[in-house]
Length: 202
Image 1 (cartoon, helix red, strand yellow):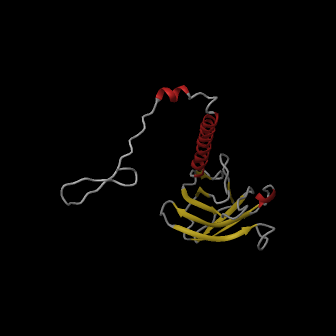
Image 2 (spheres, rainbow, N blue to C red):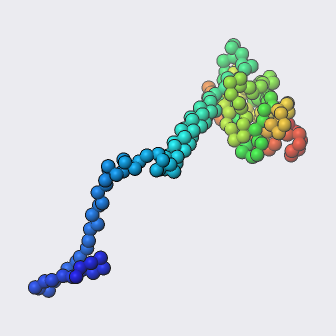
Image 3 (cartoon, rainbow, N blue to C red):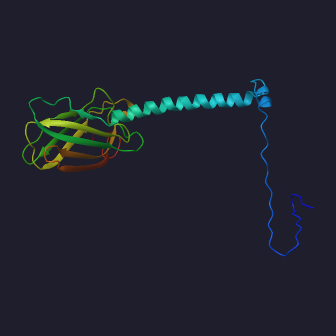
């Protein structure tokens, strides 16, 4: 007798047999489904779906907000103290560290010096977005009167006016690219510019 556990075969010759069974799908009674699909009988399911939908749309809004912020970070800032008559350009890319409270809200100034010339005291500033945030990469375009020649150093400091812990700054390194020759110069820092950390210099 054939059942779920064994198959009984009858044959008039010797050969190999194999057996199996197929579970037929249970037809869905749609009339029963819709008749019992009311909210009162399925509160848990409906509330779960509603909550998941709300969370999903909130995540979409948050993701869109973060995307806009990321797009802002990708922009290049024209230094506010650039002069219109200066037509020689450098791109300055500043890398802020990932350590806790690495970013700063203090005003950052610098002097870039080369073999042929050096800049006046310049300032990093952007009125449209936050700069020098933790883990941030900020790109600036600086104009000067003429080429500075092969670059030797960049002297950089801040005024320590940021509120609370945002006064200090952990600077990783800076890349300066001559936009005429496309030559790059790397200036490694990897230290805190803070009165309360490391050597106390800003």
